[in-house]
Length: 317
Image (spheres, rainbow, N blue to C red):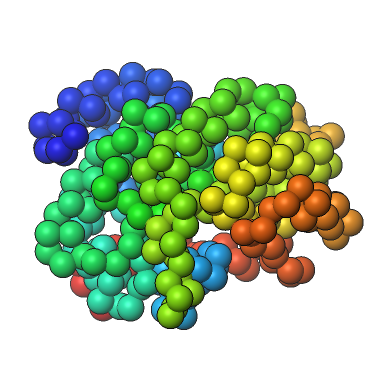
């Protein structure tokens, strides 16, 4: 689909971009679950060094953190921007220019972080930037909770997909993300992502991914059994035609203490070394070979970027 301003207006007037299917008239200032209107808003655009090594490299990933989210997990590390509390409105011309500025700063790719609720606008801005000289890979960094029909807009524009697959259990996804259909929707979305870009290609010179899919899975406290089911599904479905990144960086956030429905949950603590080791042992046992793991010390709020508007201003260096 060729994206035009008229097409964007039509989509935004009856929004069904994500599985929430809010049908909000965002052109008229209405907001759905994502909390965003029709204008693109972002909280940060800067070189980012905290992704997988094949995404960051030495130069850093050119990450644009968009405001709002269609999933909004209760434990989200980017809680403020997921709720839309941080962000600056950007014109599509400015967004295109931001992509080019990140390339000029040495970014090894453009990393679109939680952009699903702005997909039509992002597609148009990417197409404009590519015509103006953007030639580094584009990464789509997602919760995994996506509509296949929306992802098809990105075909030919995105080189690398970096989705989560958070849960297999509908009970967990309902409790922690208010999305009992998460696994079904995320599996379909990952299937479409793989269809578009296929098996991974890693540059033999730089070690950077040029195209492919990396699925992230964040281990949660007391959820090792669900993690094993997620990993089993991914390996049974894709074998080693994708990378799997198994994360231990779960960080209990301050706002969780104010949620009475989670008072007795395990989210108040970090994942133990023993829990993580059991999941890694399982991944090795079932034959996962293309993967990333994390070492200790990653579960800390200091790893969360400052969402201070860096890189968004027209006057940015």
